[in-house]
Length: 580
Ligand SMILES: Nc1ncnc2c1ncn2[C@@H]1O[C@H](COP(=O)(O)OP(=O)(O)O)[C@@H](O)[C@H]1O
Ligand SMILES: [Mg+2]
Image (cartoon, rainbow, N blue to C red; front, side):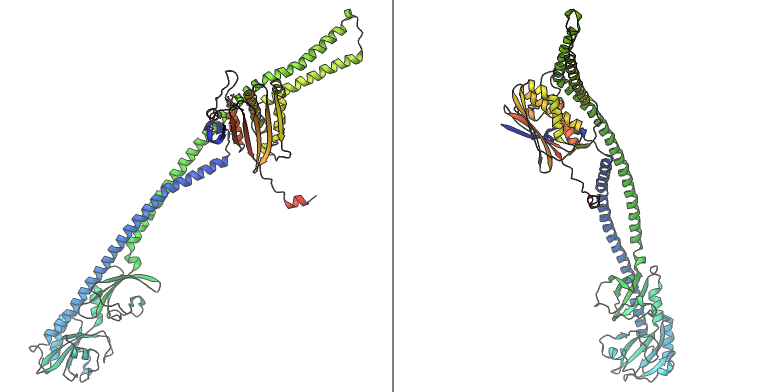
């Protein structure tokens, strides 16, 4: 049964600590954390604030509308009352006890005086005979006497209306001065006479708009076509209302825009006639409370957000700082572990090396002993200088071999700070095989090389990679014991440079396979294995951005596949390429 794993899936986190992080990593982490925390804190707060703001301001807006509406209704009632009172005044004046028909001298003057006592808004008073002529008059326009009023707008209204009174719109009339009239009729001997009084709209306007209702507000009366009855709109375009919508029982309220300025306008219909009372307030005044709450909310949000930002920035900086120190500590620990493991693997190869050093030492011993004998005078041998030279040469060669071996071992054991450089996998394979040659040959293990020529260089640390491969070869040898084959392969696969080592050893069960990358996991006897080789190797490969995959079947063998990213060739600038 074949088992197959990807080291990333089974390796414990400690083995990954070899990966070093550059300062940009922590910057990135800090920024990301900050962004996420800020979002997590601020988003709900903003949503909540927006929700409450919306709720509260629609509430407040409604309260403001209600306020303006009730203001308009109050003023409407006042205006209604005013007109009704004027009607009542003139109705009681047109009583047979007060005014004889036809009127006699002084009657109208008396009536006018009485009306003026009731309200200073009365301007004049006149009596019309059934033919529509003004027959008696008191007031500032005596020249009106004798005029025929049948053509005046109010006259036919009163003559035919089922109502017993008329209140006209403001108009100029014969006198050429704005006024409106209140008129009532009375039947004398089957014929209809009229009493009419004119009212000064300015006085009415003062009355309506007088009780200072709200700072900046305007209250005025308009007729059904929207013409102002009480306020002069000359120089006040904002007071123009335009045709009113159909009369309704309720007071309407609306935001309007006039010449770029916004107003809140309430319209309440009068009961006595087709007039409406308008209350108009500049929007900035009307909605001032709204603006104040908005400002308060915005201020609060700014303070809150500033606080949150400060806390988040501070805590992420602290947190990431701690993480950085922890990573550094972990990394230095792993480096120590790494070095310990390296020394251990040096121990593992020491046996092979000792064997290799023994050979030249034996040669040196043999040759030197022979020379000593040759030079002994008691043997009486004469020394051939050529032979003498040959023997010394053999000693020299053997010493050089010994020195090379110890040098190689020393070079391997030297503590290296891992630095990245371009590495050729083929070179790594050759160097490791040189160290392991004798050892493998002694165990009768054949080595097959299937190296792809011109494999692109990878970025890593050659010394560390040698350590990795050495450990894999040692593991293969241990798994084989005696008599077998180790195959070393390099190839390019989907843009990854791969180094593969296949053995014909005893293989691993799924259970063993799932633990091989754990530090100190070993199936070898005491003094033989440390259990550090694969975990360290994994850390090293990981730190170079690589991956490890293992395939193993019990009794058949194991294949470790290391994959390394191939850096994309930096494009040669066209200039440099074409130059020289
Ligand atoms: N090529 C292999 N064939 C069979 N088993 C292996 C092979 N490589 C590693 N192992 C198993 O993985 C274990 C851990 O290996 P390693 O981490 O190198 O530590 P060590 O070699 O010191 O035991 C070994 O003890 C062995 O059981
Ligand atoms: Mg090992």
